[in-house]
Length: 93
Image 1 (cartoon, rainbow, N blue to C red):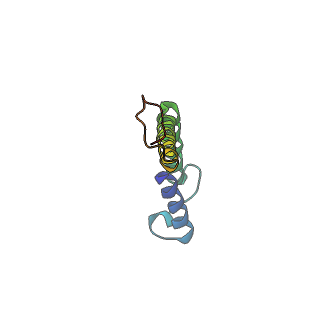
Image 2: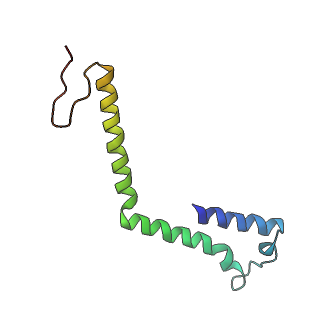
Image 3: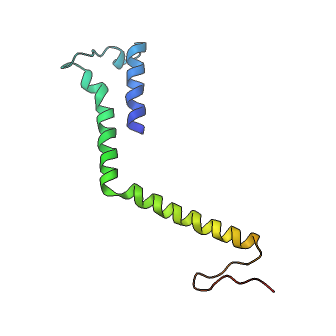
């Protein structure tokens, strides 16, 4: 996401005429690559993350933690107490 923000910032600076990006040209074999480089790096980063499966694993772990917290809150609100994972939930006496 940082690379996308950087690329957008370069484009805004170019059109506003601020700093070095304001003086860059947009010819195909000129300075155009400087504008496109952050977007290309962002695409490369996202592709690597998708191929590694790290994002999917993190999302599954987060879902499992949220599910466990919901179960504990539900059990506590019903007055069942908190059970150990190997012990079934029983009502309190």
